[in-house]
Image (cartoon, rainbow, N blue to C red; front, side, top):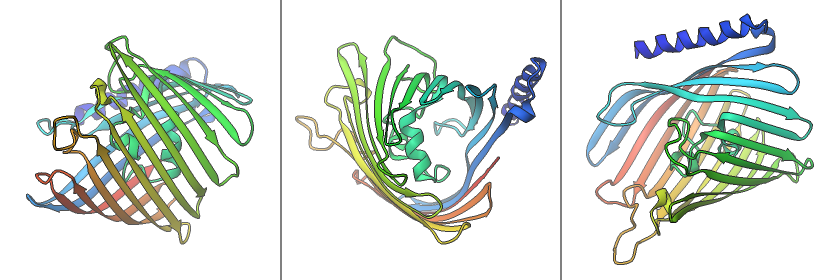
Amino acid sequence: MRGVIVIFIILYSLFLNGLMAQGIDVLENGRPVIQVFSNLHHSRNEKGKTTEFQLIRSYLGYNLNYNDNFSAKVVFDVAPPNEESSLDYHAFMKEASLTYKKDKLVVKFGVIPMKQFLLIQDIWGYRYIMATFQDKNKFGPSNDLGLNIEYKFTDIISTDIALSNGEGFKRAQTDNKMRYGTGITLKPTEKLFFRLYGDIIPHLDTIQATASLFVAYHLKNNYTIGAESSYQKNNKFVDNHKIYGISIFGNYQFTEKIGVFSRYDILKSNIEEGQSNPWNNTENGSIYMIGLEFAPLEHVKFSLNGRYVSNEDRTVGKQTSVYLNVLYKF
């Protein structure tokens, strides 16, 4: 962990020094990006009880505005082990993007956040507690190496298209397959959102296809009600492997510092011919969550929340948890 932090600091310093060498005032034209997600939780299931501290995410980067049209953003991410056999944290490039904005046009290139995930994540508003439904269940990468073009026709309708490698931001391009995605966002009013999205990834004789519908009524700093429905065919390029589900969430702010939220997710998969159980049985199930958030400062948040997970596979069973999530950022 110490070695990762040292590398982080060295790369970050080199990046800022390079900008200053070009005569760019990094203080006047940009701002640092710092976010840390951590938690303390206690869980209970059929196998027993666990209590542990977790560092879920630690972002460090910089957002620079060259002028009114061009900007760049570089963000490194330190993440926990993704395999139980590994105890080492690992660092990777979360974002390395160049953005061009002109009137109603926005173009992003590089390692970029996918519009589909970013919009829903912003409205959900509790990424430090739990990822959005598609992100959590790996319908696709939240960030990817590619190109995204967004055009706002009117205040009501905008569209976007994306071409990316489909491997996600943790891996380089390893084959010739590409992800082709497009979405339409409707805002009949400032509070009401509709989002229709789809993407395909052709690979050999199989095409993985994803479709999603998102609806939300969002009054910032007051309350939100949202629902997301997602479907994917030929998951991971296996014929007739389908996953689908919904996520429903809401929140209400009593004051600027205190609010409550809740969320319900359910994930399903199909039963293959000749089988008695769904192919993704160990991952299928429901999540119920309810919580309280307290924000003593603008950039510091605490959340005490309870979760109940019910898995379709009886060998996995049910789990109840209590979490204290913490976010601090700049």
